[in-house]
Length: 385
View 1 (cartoon, rainbow, N blue to C red):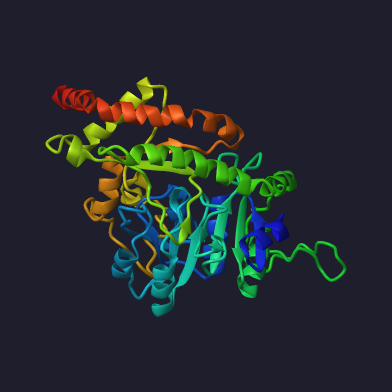
View 2: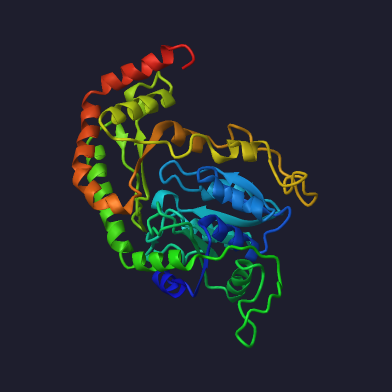
């Protein structure tokens, strides 16, 4: 599996580990992130991206996102860098590659490591290169709901660095060398490591799925295009943006609600919820994916740590909790967007047959927008809403 995946993305090495979060933890640790080091992560991602920094005893420092791509804003990230910053994590959210040219230039200029979180984006590409080969280290997830789906938790770390590769191989198995000169296990932990080994069964299934990954992703893209074409014909919904230099693989399909056109006098989140309820009545479940910017989750807002509060209380470096209004673009996205779930490979073919019905539901809502506004207005009027 490791050789096959490294070849697929165009990297020299691949290290299989127990989960995508484990891949992030090992990557950051192998790059030397330690107590008090700061790592820039986007304010819209899964909590595991930032939690992996804590596992490495580093401090996650959040940057705002771009409203059009939903990925980390390199300009905002630049303002978050201090003398303690060690790395930047570029999350390819929902299968849409981040602006790697800008991030690579920023990392080069400030002598920082660049880590790709490609958990939702395996098979996507940026300027003709597969994600997983664009940073110093890249991490993927192969759990059952991901684009490259297996039958259990698993993660893949890719890199071109001999040093990162050798350290990661040790870290995933108690810090030991895999075998001694005689080929037998010597039970000598050379460095701090964990039990992050990848199940051979999970790896075998993932390797088999890899041969079908491009086909699965093309099916996702076809489904997404059907919906995007329909949304583009309305004035109240906007499809996700796929930049010319990128190939989006639509782990999730995030669409935007033009609240400024629907009813600018009403709270955006009320209109979002009205759209969500209306779609559900049409038999189409949607969600928010994240309900608040990640820095507002309790773990990061209250600075929950290990033992006596490490790494937040580490004497090598401290950061105050982020201000609630420090990520305006992230909040606007959360207030005005919803996601469709396209992440079940087994249902993709069946789902494709029904994408026309989904598209019709959006067109129907656009034609009956007054009912959405009325539903939103009623929710605002209700006590406790």
